[in-house]
Image (cartoon, rainbow, N blue to C red; front, side, top):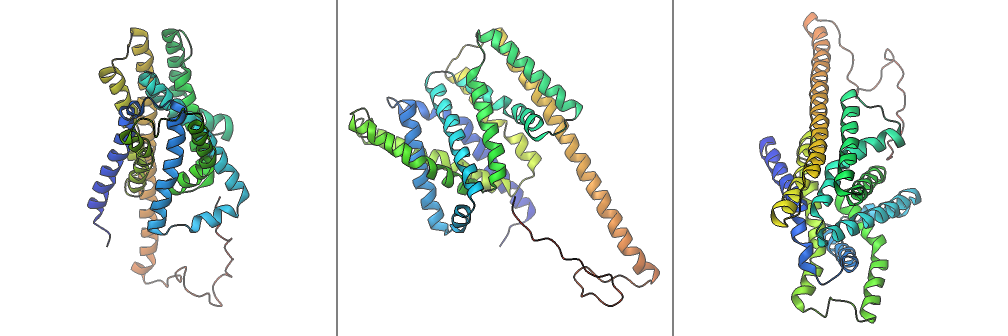
Length: 346
């Protein structure tokens, strides 16, 4: 039995906070896996994530999507692209955290919305509103300031932002749920990752069995750390408005930034503060514009619904005969029905 709207909304918010909170606190986890290197951690993440999500999907008996996907070569090719792109994203992020560059990694997810908008303009020929153009311009200025501050382009941030934006674009075209998508992508990653781990073991460089059962358990738990936030995110996405999810997404990089500065003690000279301030200004512009647009759309939808209801009520009030409802069978006096096109997935 479904809960009340208020209960559903509260459940969605709690799951949203849980998902973005876990993503925001994950920099605390990767250093626990040392002395394993970033590539070994990445390979374990791929292997154990597939095992975890496969077990979850077997438990809920949700496998129909897999057969459908295998019969669609174009979608399958897009899954391979998504798997390759997220491999780069995961690998760079793990390396950045374990090499003491959490703040720069957090910047990647701050600028990700700006990169997504820029890709929409360049690749999808989308048209931006003036405020969105201003936000993108401020974001570019921030990258210039940070390049001066770091003495080099913030390549970790840019790599994370562009890889994740590309991943989002590809996933939109694949049109799979979060857990199903992770299962498909890690299925692509599984054999190369397992082969690499076996190669490491054959050369005596693997840490899985060399550092004790605690270390092995931590490496195995990378599957849970990867999949659990996705489960919570999926529960939130069906219960809260997209505008709310858009605001919650900033929790993760905020937590990561605070961990980098406060917990890991990374340096923040004035020019970096200036660059981050510009990024945050761009995000304020972007978020404010999105909220205004959402409110205008909601008001327009409500006004249109009220107009339709008024039109439906007018014949009843005047005693005039009413047209048959859409589901009523056609009569000789009604217009000939047209056959609707079949519903297809993109």
